[in-house]
Each structure stands twice: as structure tokens, then as C-alpha cells.
Image (cartoon, rainbow, N blue to C red; front, side, top):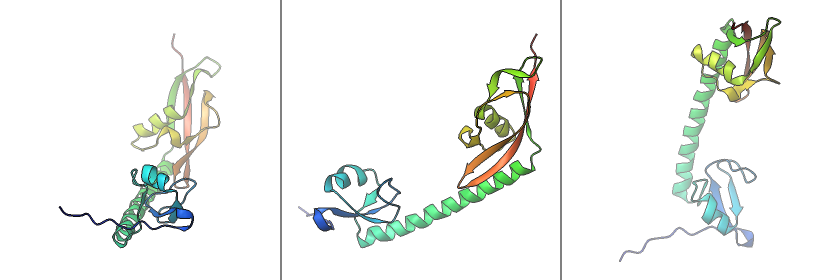
Length: 167
């Protein structure tokens, strides 16, 4: 029967385990940080979820490769978001039709979902969470709506709300 060689667990002061984080963990540390945690927290939460690994030479090499891939994916995502922001800047605006009274008051409202749908109709990948509205639009008119695309990339789109009367 072959015996499996176990990696020695590195112990810190107070008997806690030393681990290297593979992901950012709120209130604990960032990816690549060496942290000391209680054995139960490591065994039952961090290691099974892939949030941390035991700091062996092999694991540290794998972590470096993983960090490089994550950084490259992040840079590619930022480049995509900047390109989307430029496309939105060149856009003259979007038009949204909504049922309204003769005076221009909407029966409902225009919110982030409708603005997102209007941008998606123009093949721009904007989610409703990216639309920054203080409150829903309740009257017809022209509005400048801020968009937070992520990674501190922000832009603005002009939204024309046009009322339609159904009689």
C-alpha cells in the first residue's frame, strides 16, 4: 500500500495556519497575500472553495501563472469597456417611447432596464446595473444619463423620452 506524502502545514503564531489567497477575500486580504487563519476556517471554507492554498513551491508557481492570466483577462475587459464607452460617446442618443398624457407626464416610468434595452438594440452591451439614474424618468424630454461601465470607466448617453398616446 502506497503512502501518500502530505505537505506540511505551515503554522503561524498561536497555532493558526498560513495560507496563500488565490482570490480576494473580503476582510481577509487580496489575491497572493499570505494570511494566517484558524484551522477550521481554512479547512471548512477557504480551501474547499478554492479561495486559498497551502504555500508550497508548486502552488506558488501555479498562483503566479493564474495571476498573470487574471491580469490579462482584466486588461482585455478594460479595453472592451473603453471601446464601448467610445461607441456610446459617438452615439447621438437613444429614443424611448412610453405612454404619456397630453401634458407629457408618463403613465409609468422609464428606468435603467428600458435604457439598457435601448442601448442593447444598438448592439451595445450595457446592463441595467450600469445605468446611473437618481430616480426613474417620469416625463417626456431629453435627458443625459450617466453610465458606469465598470473599472472606473464612465460615460454619458442622451436619452430622448417620447410620449405616445393610445386612444
